[in-house]
Image 1 (cartoon, rainbow, N blue to C red):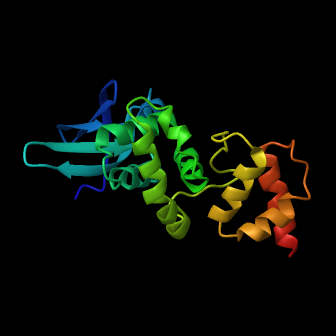
Image 2: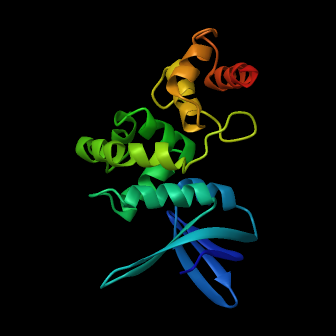
Image 3: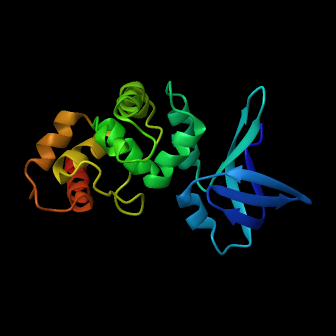
Length: 199
């Protein structure tokens, strides 16, 4: 298994980055967000997933381990292939993906080209427990991943984020219910964490 590749970025195109390592160019299928992160850099590191089929061997590369974990979660869903997985992660960050799954927001995925309503529902249904139990995708406030509106409703997103961080829903609700609901998600989480720390 190839864990990661570190080398010279020699070529990019839509959904593809070629990394030269020891004279060999590795073509890595990737997301728009990874291409943005590595754009303009000479030496890059991509965390990889190798998919082997009877008629094809494909290498997928991602700028962060969280994006790789999100990709592996997505392709574990029945009916979701690598192409759809890349489409999802080209449209949202790992933290947005985790929040959408945790809140049961299948509509967030139907807005992505190639993802129908049934597939979106399967993503939420099959991954909700995995995201909650394993805390696979880290969701942080200050200094971590930004919280961007997936479902619309800052209070609901803030509660979900705190649950993903390990607090119970009742603990999160009890603190957030005392805060101004017009605050941004990031502000709600920041103030809620201060309140929870006092307990």
